[in-house]
Image (cartoon, rainbow, N blue to C red; front, side, top):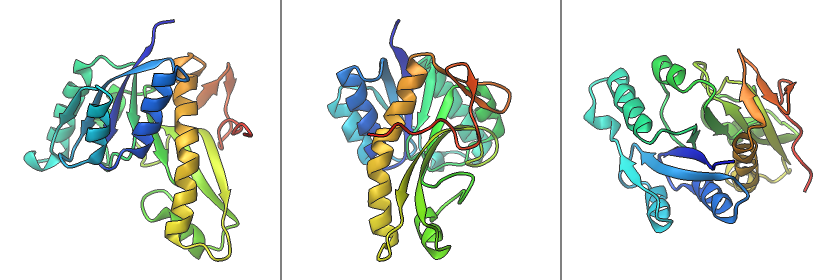
Length: 216
């Protein structure tokens, strides 16, 4: 099976990007990253990509008059690299419906909460404030609804009595670096698809929480 062509979108440090780079390098993911695109020129993830010999592109959203114009240009840029999967790895932009539709079923995102809880920002503090027993991260297909597409898999961590948003975020990040490569691996093995408004894994429709997270 030919490697799955990936394009990764980032805005920041790129730690999830690094996990996917490493997983492709070892063969854990049967994939190759064709390009890494950032909306910020100073994103450290661009350096990670360059050090791995991956093509990088910067498309600064501040150079465009509207979200629609930016997403039109972004869609064209992504298409230049003919990806089979677009991976959002800390890409801090709300995408327009037109762009989402263009890559429907071929775009994944990771979100630091147990969706459908805590869509949007400040998820770690919100989970602590709600006195939740556990928190975590979700990988989901991207749809027009913010952080609302079908969940593929979730990783959970307990919330400890003395947790701060920072300490909780660190533990969630560790799980993200296992969870995201795992889901991209499933996609690269053609075991994962998105149908109408749900995810299918190994020919089975996934429940709202996605597939069970494999115990390590």
